[in-house]
Image 1 (cartoon, rainbow, N blue to C red):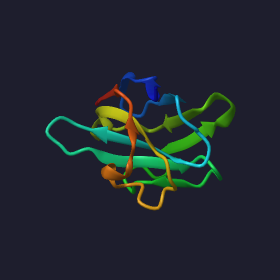
Image 2: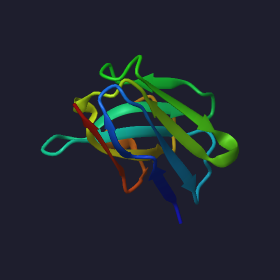
Image 3: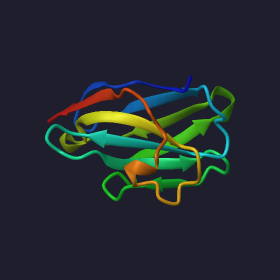
Image 4: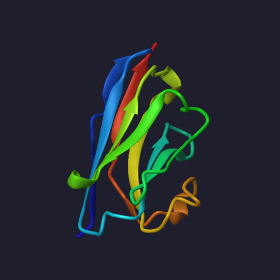
Length: 125
């Protein structure tokens, strides 16, 4: 059974940091695309960052470049999202997702085969 379990969300003040984790199990973790998405109330789900687990290539949305860093620990089948300089507009539910192929279309939600349940991030001004 495939599982993606997110953790690390919480409430912080603007300028603060959080690190999200996504632990994957139940499928072959290597050589696939792991993405982080977020969805704020009343808005569509949007891509934040992605990493190709086979080679470590990373991808970022313009809104988070320079502030967020995606990384992985292959030994733990875990992907991380380090979020620094957080802004109130980063407030959202954050989801981890797995695409069993490369990250060629990492922003497209329909490309992903599995999704986690999400972890809430709230940034206050």
